[in-house]
Length: 334
Image 1 (cartoon, one colour):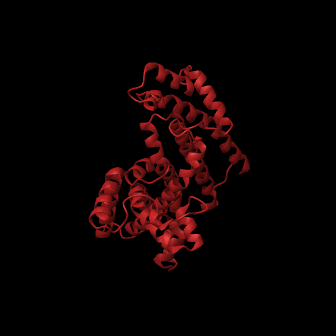
Image 2: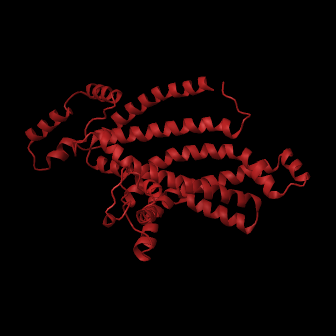
């Protein structure tokens, strides 16, 4: 077990190095000069060149990459070209917002997706099954940003049921010890701010959860139908066990392995997909931060943000692999 964990952790190093190389060189393929963006359109050539020299952009790419790699190894992702603040500090300020949004979306997608999949499998080939799978197909087909805009127009602009942007109403004057607004207010029992944070979280979480929810529902349905045909399920039914016991005690546990795999992959994808959702709902997380940095050609911010998301994806998949043995004791790691 521990040997397997050590081997998987060891694989993180070449993976992270590949991510560093890809992020560093791909960001420089984007048209535009960060020095020109900072200096402005009316700046002289000398002024632009002076900024390029100050930022180190006049150095050959291998030299720039070596400096970038050396900084990463020391936990330094550089300073933002726009704000002059260390990228690590700005990422840590925004990461709680992305984590809260991703966890809320993943919780919604997993709970509702598994329940819909179970109901659809139990009542297969009925109107309930066809309706559920049709909605799942629609959910996986709709682009996240389009669904987000529709939710925004209907529930925030027309009906005025939910707020359109942000994490919490600034008029509440909230100041917390951490940037985890939702969780901190829940633990501290400040219900006014908690309810307001929850209302701000609903629309972006629903938009972000639409695709993984649909995928999990379809995966759960297919795996349960496959397990329902096995001999031990027929034996359990022959013993006179109720259908609820058969489904939740004997079928669901064996059907969960592929669902856990998909859920783990979707967590990583949600971290990347949050870029669009955070932009639509002006959610102050890493996704929106990276989009604004791309517009400003802020190389250190884009590099640091994507590196952080990619490493989170690697860690989540490692945890998913280890969960296999917890769910199914028959699985052993060499």
